[in-house]
Image: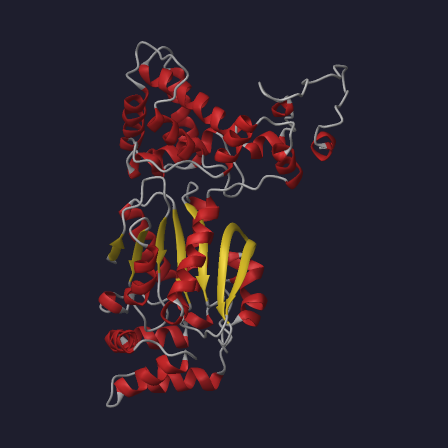
Amino acid sequence: MLKAKIKGTGTPGDVALVLMHFLGGSTREWDEVVGLLGDGFRTVAVDLPGFGEAAGEPGYSVAEMADAVEELIARLELGRYVLVGHSMSGKVSAVLARRAAETAHGRLAGLILVAPSPPSPEPMTDDKRAGMLESLGAAKDGDEARAKVYIGRNEERDIPPAVLARTVDEVLKMNRAAWVAWLESGSREDWGERVGVLDLPALVVAGEKDASLGEDSQRKFTLRHFSRAELKVVEGCSHLVPLERPTELAEMMRAFVAELGRVPVPAEYLEFIASERVSPRTRAVLEARMAGPEPTDMLTPEQMVTLRAMLARIVPQKGEGIDLAGYVAASLAKGKGDGWRYAVLPEDAKAYRDGLDSLRARGFDEMSDEDQDAALRALEEKKGSAEACWFEEVRGDATTAYISHPATLARIGHSGIGVGGANTQNKGFVAIGIGDVEAWEPKELVKA
């Protein structure tokens, strides 16, 4: 059973970053990046079996490493999370992502892959493999010097002496059987067909001077597995990006996470929102919605997990989708309801807490989609009960959050926001015939 080094507080609505390391590394490789991200990010650094504090843990195959991380994520009840894999753990991350796409309930928000080993066999020459096996495959005199060569060979920039010494120590801590297992088997495993193409946001980071898993390798072997991937190259950097360029990497990670809450809105609709047809007040509201929900601790992390699972069945979405749970929680925090409630219900926040806790106690989070649907239908059928009334409120809140988002307004071709406001000269709609379209309405949306 793996342990984790958890840093930062964040809020229940935030994503946790699950950080995994390179061959011979450990959680310590992320120390600088985690420090730069600050307490506003919840980070969960993991020692994979055979490395760091998990040197005594068995299970060195890709599937076994994925099993161990999957168990840890479930045990920590992380809610939404991003997998961050470096080198060896990039392959593990891809396998975990495929599993999540098939079995989870929208909790995996995306991936950050740093110089990753691809799902297919890692491009490594036989000579390099043999040299690495000979160098550190078994403990012997001169290991420290060879570990320094291993780390030094992986970087073209100077690593701060203290960081270099720490990294060498971590290499020497590893279970040599894990090192051998990766080189002889894990790196050769072919998960390409099983991973397939993942419809998740992904950031792939490559070092400009990485001779083995640099830009060319990532374009050839990794990007084809992601429909929504962005490749960024760190200039003057080799393979150990978290150690060589922690500042640049932290900024990339920060920007990636910030974009996760944003759902793409068509360019024409963005132009429409920015036009004089839309009042300044309405525009400000729409822009705030596009920025994503405001973080809040109104609900616990466990309650947010259940709410996300629940809303995924009420309003199914493809891909990342609108963060409906985040918007609902933010609305609860502001005390903004619809102005009334059923007499059988307590105030809104308590009704949500009680309802979510009740569902969670029944194992709702871990149910199959079909069983979740059945559980929700059972709530609906309890006519007049507090549970049924609360479920009605949840459906209304989820629908409001979904339909009011600019991405949805664009999708349905809604042009009603273009009627101006109290201080504008617009006259609203003039053409009122069936099929009549105003000259100012977004044309592409009308055609759709």
